[in-house]
Figure 1 (cartoon, helix red, strand yellow):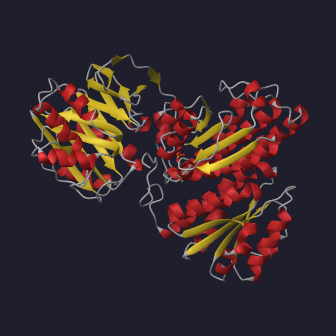
Figure 2 (spheres, helix red, strand yellow):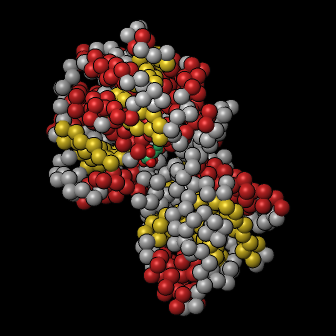
Figure 3 (cartoon, rainbow, N blue to C red):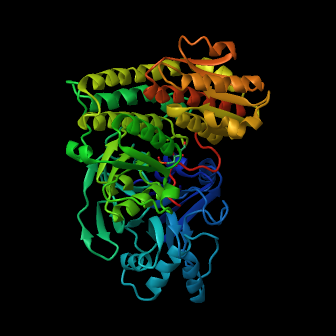
Length: 612
Ligand code: F6R
């Protein structure tokens, strides 16, 4: 969703805001703007389209000043247009606001404010905020902070706000409810941002603002308070990753870089959680006894993280004997799922800010359930609202299409399932050893697949041109088929469907003809579904489908059916999805490249979906 930045210090604000917005552009990229305050005026610039358009405009018409706010937009209310772009201003131009989130009661506030003589220029929900603040000042609020508080008390919905007052020259304000916002602490300068990567090159300490808090930033200090005026002593945290983690590092895109990071991330997770004596440590605070008594798990997540949850369900129910369900968070929150307080809820989220996942957590908490998150972002809302977290430790994922977060989530589930199975006695120490040995082969196998990218590129280029493609897999690799199809849709804009191969005969077989690429995930070691999958591939062949097969080394059977074979190392079936998906990520990547799309910032998408 949208990205917010702010700066106050002794340097020129505009270049710092633009740099922050460049690093946040993955959150939204249909328009951008900044406002800077100087010499008794708030001066702003905003442009439709990519940030580069705003940069060009600012080169022609520079904006000077040492405090300001900036925004990159993913449109919710009102089309991407200059007038709908942030910052939005009060009628007198003295207050500028940038916002991520949705003000749900904006229509009624707008009517009220219009009645009081305020004129609105945009179709956005955000524009009510500067007008509400302006009205509070007219109504006698004693200070900017008090006027902001009064405005915030009227808002329903979600917000991360940056606010600049012309007449309060030494301060930048911010506030948070339900949308992420951090404060970066520098030397005689301070920052606000939607997330750490936006300002990672400038600071090493942050305050994660809590919901219902606001802050006044000066160059030499930060004061945090609750919206109702109670001063808070914030916790200052050291940032765990380095500025280079949020750079391209010589790769043509962030997505390609992040695909390449996977073996290292998987190795690091193994090293962190598998002890020298071969036992597993989750380090989450949930006791082995808790897992021994557990009899139901519910996994909730969205998109790619949902596919990781589907994989987790298969592993957990297979290894532990616990009943496991999985649901899309956007559906779960409107179901009546009959969950008892003894059920463990596992939300899975890269960003930790996905609105539907958060709503599901809150709902499950109200039923008395424990929440054990799998999440990548420290300090995120999911982490803060959960009882315990397994961190996927991927570093910032900047490519909008998720890759490294997915395989790390899969590894998290593998380690979690093995841990629970071993503490419950579902796995003997010998069996655990065997599984861990197999799991340790995964990072190298993923590395091997990535090394074959030139071969995968040729296949991607050969099949990129059709209108559609079908991805088939079974059992552990059914989620892989869904994820492969999702990657393809997201970045190449080619329609793609993932299907459980056994379901093909129940409908999608009607699609198969000589022009439909059918990507068949058909790896094997001892999996009982291999033979079944092979029959499904033959059914595709019999109808002249263009088969692209992902097969295990040494499998000669499938090579007879197609020239387009991606050979991957044979790993234990349970863990093969981590290896196979790397091939599908690359396949989607090179198809998208051949189609000339903007891979890191696909159209209409936003990295972190903070609205429902
Ligand atoms: C797809 C993708 C999305 C996210 C989904 C959940 O490539 O990135 O489908 O997986 O929006 O996001 P998180 O994991 O941040 O909750």
